Length: 324
Image (cartoon, rainbow, N blue to C red):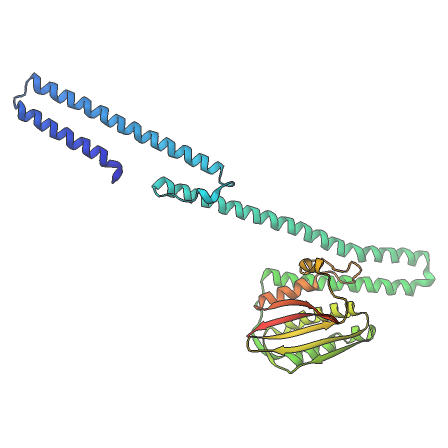
């Protein structure tokens, strides 16, 4: 309504002056004609000035919007507000641009992460394949030690199988194609299954497993929680280099926890920030792939829980924390 205010005032004034001229000289003669002509000219000039002023304001607003769009990356917090129609239009354009740039930035980050991920997978696959090819050459050159080379090849093939298995599980978690169950199950019975699943690991490395704490029921996906604990125990076995691994059950009114404890030196503080990155290994000599901890974290995230790491004077442990 405000943008027609000037026009309405001029029109009313013109009508008033026209009526005055007719009242002063009611006869239609040269004087009345001249007065009408003068008033028409004044009206035309006034309307032209209003139009020019509006065009000038419009051009200024457009220039301001163009300038704003150019500086949106630099001072976006200063330009996202406006009261008039152009201000609101500017706000919407800027918000749309910022949103699209954020999406583009996220897409670029995902592309870089995917590239790194594929490079890491390629490296993990090529290493055992190279070993297998080398063993095949040695079998041809030294057939007397064929059994020894086949045994080494078997280990490399097992490693490839393990990699394929864990990558498949990670892809299920990443894609969200399967819903994790919410069921009640005994934590201690699940830990006994962990012990059975890793019996060969314990016997091979002459390790002992100790399960302590009172049993309780967890609400979650038993199969995936079992997978998480198995990965933590495998890491503990490798880190301990003999001795024992302890699994402790703890609970309070807020949460229930499974603690997997080993008695190694632990992870240095300088490396803690990277332990959940895929294919990162705190110990470069580790036999693992560097995927176990990221998968554990993904499983716990999907169940609304946490993975926590703590180092003490004589041990260190990972805690799977399930909130009630």
